Image (cartoon, rainbow, N blue to C red):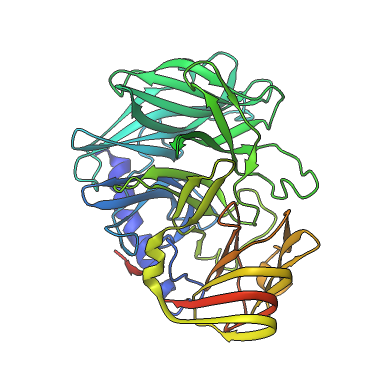
Length: 473
């Protein structure tokens, strides 16, 4: 423990105590989404199951609700429903991470949790910090109890990466397969091409480049937050590319988030299929997957968007949250994502109706709404500030000016609409379309949202959702 670490370890709890005061009476806080105690939250990191708990680490700026220098915050849960805020896991306290403990992943092995991450360094001088002046270092923190980091070490730095990449190489995702360890890193080349670097290791510490994966034509200038995994026999490369311009209703956000099916062997000859956007709402980015103890592939995303032109009214005290955990499957053509089955344990006050015309339903502070047997156009109004409308081949999510804080509308073209599931929290909406083949996630800040108005012909089932348990430090 160096002097910087000691000071940060004293200062973070002071900031979090301010957060405790701010939380009291804050009606914008969510009831079944992970949030920071104070300050800023972004990318989920180190998702895993270890020693009887799910672990969700995350990018955490405790001193600045608009960002600031990044730490790793930490939540744990035995069941995805009861959450405990753990002490800040990692601090920017070493020469190789002094300007931020950036995103990374977890490897569980040998009764220890290995946390790989990017250490960010910005050197003093007149630099652009893209091609010069930045250190993006692969580093490792190790913990045996899952809470306290016992050691940190530097594994790779800029000079260890291929000569044609810029200073932007980050976000290691690590796993073990066929007796070896593999790591993928997102990269930006010097000619502004996004690509994936694939490394292998025999000992978890010394890494050798074994492949580079990209698209025939340039697809964005940077591939952030890569995740390579197999689900239902299909390999998937998930990533958040930067630098993709809007094309009609595609790529409506400043940065997209999606996946490529990968065919072949990622270690050698392979090809990427067509890119599919994962979520076409306003707020979903940098998702990370992990395997649950029962074998499910679960993903959690950040309900935010970097460099967006919309804001949140909470930014004087805290910002952002995570999505609900979602279970992934490959249906033979598309990756599907639906809320994990544990969410159903929060349900109460169920009601069902067959609608042919209009119906108004009362709603508590949280709701799980399901529509099926949809015939023709349909409209769902959440209070006066959010509307979901299906007509003329378009599913449109609209937010009022007062509730959206710059968020207006997002549009999803569909060949057909068979079913919808909508999770509504105090300040978030997540929409799951056609069995989860597409999702739309957004933050919003309604004046009130205690009714659901549904117009059309469909079958409706609705539940109120109780709050998860959050044990704050």
